[in-house]
Structure formats: structure tokens, C-alpha cells
Image 1: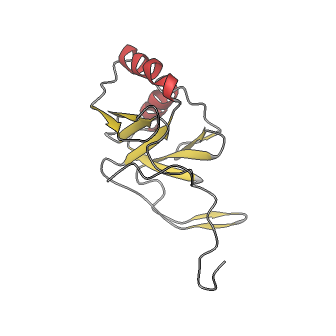
Image 2: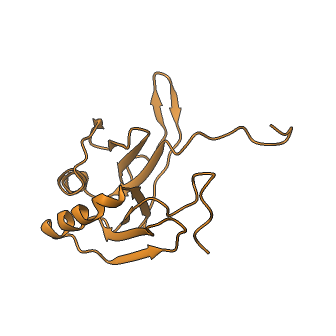
Length: 154
């Protein structure tokens, strides 16, 4: 490692969205996306994603003061507006996801086929949660995350 280089990052551990109604949000994320909470209380629900990261739902305004825990302090945070979050899916799962969303009355607002040098292009579909956050389900190849994969976006 170069002397001034940052130590490596291993991945994104948490992504947070802020919701107005926790029960409504849980109904969506559990009923539509099929997630199972690994932690839930009135201010936070945490869902495991892919075995390596967590999707955190905070009740908007509930984390605007420091949280003092036995092991330390979490500084205040919050968010507003429609935030974007992309979740990866297998390419062959895309049709099943499109059917599931349609069956649950969730409108797909957009669909994009990304240019790729893979045999099959990466595809993203976009829809909203009850708080207006833009959620994306993306098949492999969207970003050149594998060192052997060439860049595919301009």
C-alpha cells in the first residue's frame, strides 16, 4: 500500500432509508420484498441483504439526537426526500420480481438495459416504496465491480 493510500474498504455494511410510518414501511419491505427483520423497534428496523449488508429503516426524525449505548455513542442523523437504493438480483430472477411487484400492485416506473460486454446486458427495474424512495432491482453487470469486467456505463 502506498504511503498516502487509504486502507481498503471491504464493502457497504449499511444503507439507511428514512420513513414516516414504520408499520407501513415494514408491511412493504416484508410483504413485497420478502425481507425478514433481524432487529426492530419503534425507531429502527434492520433487514439483512445478501448476507453481507443491512438495509436500515429509521423512522424519520427518530435519530436526530445522539444515541448513548453501553458501548458508545451514535451521532445524530436523518434524511429527507426520495432517496435511491439499488438491490442486486440474479438475472434469471428478474421475471419473477416483475410478476411479484405486479401482483402486489407496485408499479414499475422504469426499466433500463445497460450496455455490457457480457453475453447478456444488465437490466434495472425501478419502483417506489410507500415513502417515495426509488428502489432499483439490478441484474449482474451494472457496474464493473469485478476487476476482470470492463466499464459499462458512460
